Length: 326
Image (cartoon, rainbow, N blue to C red; front, top):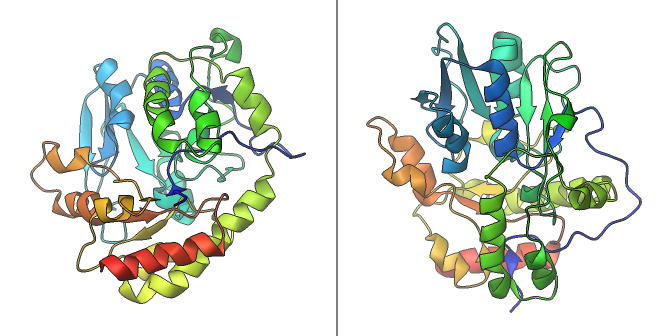
């Protein structure tokens, strides 16, 4: 049985055009982009959505920066009641790559005080950005590292030469995944994830080379087609609001976010080799008294894989498994 989803294999390359030629920096990870911003901006505190992964919080903890959690509206938008204090910044996540318009509106409101987490929106390329944006190549392609940082033209960001090229990475899992050995490569994948959080470096030459040859037009088309196909079949069963699930013309989704009722356990899909990750298990046990909606998302949301490795046959298999376990 072939696995659907999960970590990426070695990325096949074509004669591609660079997707992020106007990024200010190309670093080894999204976390490093956050660390760079902390070094430059030195905020007094940072507002972060409670619905986030621990990896996003690690740079703030390491820098001893206070974190203020905020909750999300039913459509995963940011509450208009948030007011930033002196020296504070706010992180907004572009969930599932579906919130480009919302992010643009918030950039008009908060400008350089806004840090946009585009780790689920790698294809979002902000023009003349008013805010800061960072992404993660590993969430979308088979590379060992990589994250691009955008910012206002007048923002005083360091020169890329401030850091060495990343050489502290593992890539064997990409080969094992290509050979169908997904379980054998998983521990190496986890080790590489850990290494990418250790220090700020420039993106590795290996990732730079691979990303320079990706057929981004093809990848975007397949992701959008798979998303629209699943949405056509699952929209009536999805408890998420229709406004969130709408696929704008410029959006390239990370996954198809499916919130079924009654809930379907992630393990039920994993047992059938459908790898829909839990986003994010750590939210359930994280301290905080008023985040029931975010904990429900963490427990029950199924981020169904739709990436460029997959086609109609895999989408139909996902639907068959969902019907079988419902």
